Structures are given as structure tokens and as C-alpha cells.
Length: 270
Image (cartoon, helix red, strand yellow):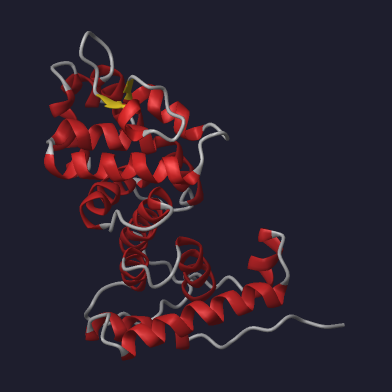
């Protein structure tokens, strides 16, 4: 069981330890959020201070999670909420870490579905990566939760891939430099604002997972050249960041390997 489940979640309340045994990590997180948001003093935020159309009262985090999922909640409001949640998770103890996890569970469940092909403990790895991302992501800028979840996904995917049993018919892995797995480096590039979460996912899928640009474009319902240009522009920004010294030498080496090892793919004609 991950360090997150064994050490952070029991701090959610006196009933939390017995919830851990035999439960899926996401179920533990959901139950812990429930414990934190029931009773006379639920873990909550002040909607009047946050603004953005939120109810002008104290909002329990369980209710806040539903509000953020509603189509009427715009990105600006979501960003304000997540900046607050990240700040509280960093400064106000384990309960707020658990609260942030609970609010993010819809996105984490989606990430778990995307990682379902791995044999490792996907939920535990995602929770561990999310707690690390809470400490590392830059809360400034737009689409905070998207960047947070993207950093979580790429880190968890790297950890799961590293722990995957070796099979004789497994695809050849890209070489990894001493700076770490390319997925981790892409996550750091997202956190630094060099590329977007979507661009990191595109590069990860087409450069690291062997998905062709043609297949990626078809799955996304987009044109080949639009996707190819998006990847090219993102990689150009990575190169610029490397030359400017924004990324460490180790990170630069990993990115260079990840983005140049595979030959460029082209659509088939005829």
C-alpha cells in the first residue's frame, strides 16, 4: 500500500485507519473526505471570499467537488479554488491534503482508467504522485487543476512503467538519462509552464508509447497536420527552454532523447 494511504489518510479522523484495510485507495480517499466534511465543523472554504459565482457561505469540500464538476463553473473560478486548496495542503496539515485529494477524485478516476493496462497498483501510484504534485506544481497561471493532474498522470505512469514486468515481446524502451524518466521530465516542463498538459500527453503518447501521430489524431477526432504541428511547436519550446538553461542538463538530455529517438511518422496515402 502506498505511503499516501498508510500515513496521510489515517490523519483524516479516528475512523480512517479501519477504512484502509481491504479498501481501494480511492475508496479510502472518498470515505476520508466524507469524514472530514460531516459534523458541526466540516472542512470547508469561504465562497464569499472566493467569489466567481460560488455560494456566499462556507462550502464543505464534498459540496465544492460537485460545484467544480458542474458545467457552469468556469476555469477562472476553478483556478481560484485550486490555488487555495494547494496553499492549504502545503501549510495546514494532512487534513487539507486529504481534502484536496477528495476534490480531485473525478480527475484521478479518469486518469486511473487511462492507466488501466498496467499491472501495478494504479490508484496508489496516482495518489502518491498527486501528493507530490501538490507540493511541486506552480499555482500561478491558468488551468491549475489540469496542470496538477497532468503532472500526477505522467509521474504515476512513469512509476508504473518502471515497475512493469519485463516481457520478451515488450517494446524497446527509450534510453533514460541520469536525470530521470522522460515522463517525469515532461511533468516538470508542464509545471514550469514550458508546455501545456495536453502537449505533454501528446509528446508522451507519440514519442514514448509508440502511438503514431496518425492514430493519435484519429482518436482525438483531429486532423493529422494539426496534431503534428502542435507537437512540433511544443518540442520547439522545449528546445528553446533547454538552450536558455531553464531545464537542468540532466532534464535536457532526457528530453532530447525522448523527442529525437523515434523517427517522425507520416500519414499513409493511397
